[in-house]
Each structure stands twice: as structure tokens, then as C-alpha cells.
Amino acid sequence: MANTVAIAPDQFNGGKSCGRCIRLYSSGVKKPPRSLFATVDNLCPECRSGDIDLGLEGDGIWRVNWEFVPCHWRLRG
Image (cartoon, rainbow, N blue to C red; front, side):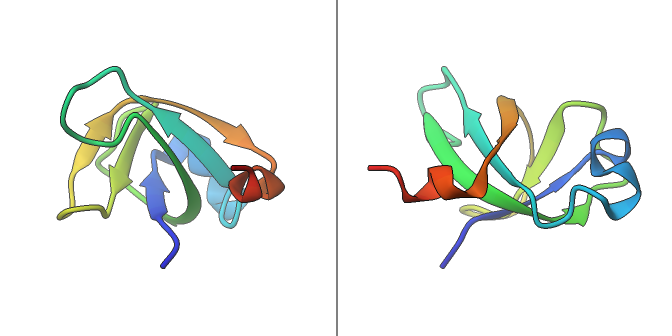
């Protein structure tokens, strides 16, 4: 199953970011994982710029570092 995320209104860009891929990374010890690829599939209206709503091990809004990446990056080792 592919990971999906919802992003803040300014990054969602009126739906233009739906279907784009992201790579998120965290220096946190527990959650979310240190590196993860996901596909944007929804708007998170309560998120602030840079936040994502990650449906992994329960829903939750995470303040992590992330960037848009080409979707073919998901296929990398």
C-alpha cells in the first residue's frame, strides 16, 4: 500500500499538487520514519504551511521536513 499525505492549503495549490510525490525526512527518533516517500492525495485545511497530515500508524499532523520529488524516485532502492 502506498503512503499518502494531505498538505497545507498553500502547498496544495488549489488541487494542482494532488498526485505529486514527496519525500519526507525527520531527525526524530520515533515517528514518522526517518525517510519516506508519499503521494499527495488530499488537502489538510487545518495544517499550517509546511505541515503534513500523514496517515501512518494513526492519523496525525506532523511538522517534518519534506520536498516535492519526481514520482520515479519512489522506485529507488
